[in-house]
Image (cartoon, rainbow, N blue to C red):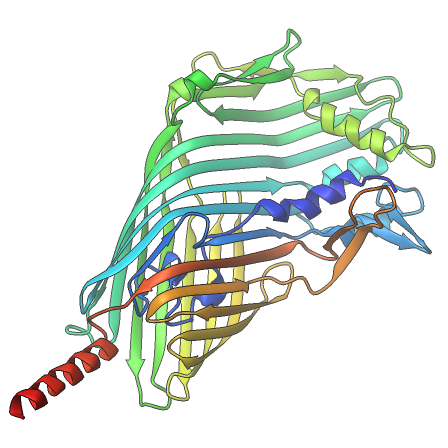
Length: 496
């Protein structure tokens, strides 16, 4: 079976992605890591988590899937490039702005502890990486239709690939202000950021005229790479050439800072309904400054370029799909002439903030709750919105169970959470915000490779699990009750 490269890219990217915390844990009252979404939240116990065991996950958010690119035909599977798949069928299935985002977080250290009944502190160290891909629908029109007429004109706008990697050291504090306003708690976190690398490639506008003898290309594009020790060359005809890396020059590409702010208010009612809880937070509000000594910048040279690189592609029944994708992959960016900026300046780049707004109604003496959470991720080029409904069950203070449903994203999906949280000991959790409801078998394995399964519709998936150590909290009601019992036993022995 042919190797369907575009589809495999869409399908395999989830294997390298993750996120800071599960949205499904936002309303799980004793969850350890929900304070990553709102620094006002506090768990029941102090905790310690460290590399490789405490917070592992994978995930991807996008609005395209395997069913957009592969079509069943009897016992065969046809790619979107096959002539038996009409242009109308393929293009009408695509969203207006195809995109997918990747987030990867690796926690090296997580520590949370109480210094008083109303005070909770967190210390964290980790590495974060994200990537944002925006692929205009017109690019897929070009791939599907090719030179349908002579000449054929395409206007491909707002294509971008933006990737960022940085390390962060954070210090957070949460305080209960119930002495001033009953039910009010607020928190904040400062993050010191060390930029490791930043790549930003944007094709704002690409006018492509395809003729039988020659293609002409007029482009408005820019790119920069912030990575110490890296070198990207240009050929004599202003095409991007190879990538070299000098390990001896390795270092930080930039420095910056970010802040998280959060608040929670509990309106107490009675024991059965406990309270109505309102919360809001903004996280990752900050920037990284990349120094000029570690940056390479490129801009399109301007004017019209005569290009012949893809003229030997055959569109139609005789098309070799694998060869076509290889050519496009290798040569598409070569359509643009670049000038290297001789003296690039420093670049100030923001990271991607998140906004969370939630409302929760606990009932049955706080054994269950219903919550509604709105999340907006402010990306580099656009904002992704999500609305999640959650049902949480707490049969005991040591166990959280939850199921949720997300509805604003391209894929409507069910999520779930199971978390074991002892007051002292080893805790663990496992869960997902997006779960595949349907999967698609891309390869039968007859070509000697393992069978490949992919999400049938939009690629929205994440999965997280982890373990940590809880260390109790001498300020909580359970600890106070134990102290009172111990003191009562001492008094009883003295009286005897």
